[in-house]
Length: 330
Image 1: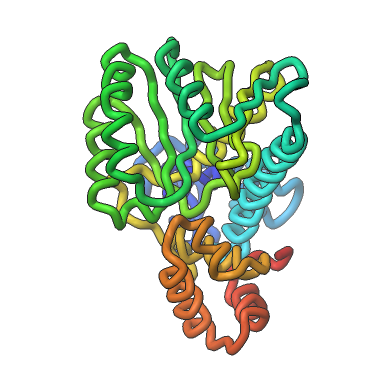
Image 2: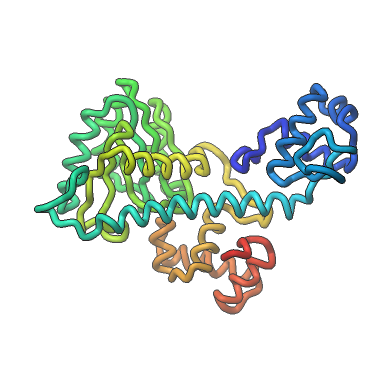
């Protein structure tokens, strides 16, 4: 359950047992869990590295220190891990936004090496069609914007089917809001039945398609696709974009997986809304990021403020920090 925070299942089992029985010895813990004692000590070392366990004396990472380690309370240890993961994701997103801004003012007549400027949405679609026809091994895509249109899904089916039949790996990340669209869910289910992989997240940093880890197509302006896009090549640029995709993919939820809530009982979409509110986004901006209607974004924000007992968005942010729904650094 907590693998995304670096806590594998065996280590989580040891952590839960330590919380239930503080001070339990390695031998007793191994017997209770039905695992070798060495496995328990390895879990102790991992928990110490994650700041989820501390020894009463000596080096907190030393599993041989006198006495068994004590588990750090979840509200302290797990909050630290969550904050660290959020910081890593924020850093990846900031790197992508800096990359986009570098190419925002490129002129079509004089693009630098490794950049092909596409002046319109039609040019982007035509270039993507050529790239995906020539793909050899893999396609990775961010697909923001909420539910997909019937026309777009129908147009993409023949190509997607050819690629998957050829054994091309296809991974696509949609917004959580597509789960409210039966047509979009049916299309995503169809993709997975053919071998594609589909996950969802509450928000996406940009629209992006990466082909064979060698070529990427992104918009010039993530808020206005009509301004055109760029085709990027080059090892450094693609390494960064692929790392961004893998970070988001690791935190995304498989299409068939039930909604998950954090310790404060927020689902992913509510948590994203709260974060966007704290960052000062309007209802319209939040709606665009989540891929939902303006009314839905306002409803989510209102429900969150009611749950927090806040009369303003500033007060909501402060109360969310107090409750542990937002890190104190926000």
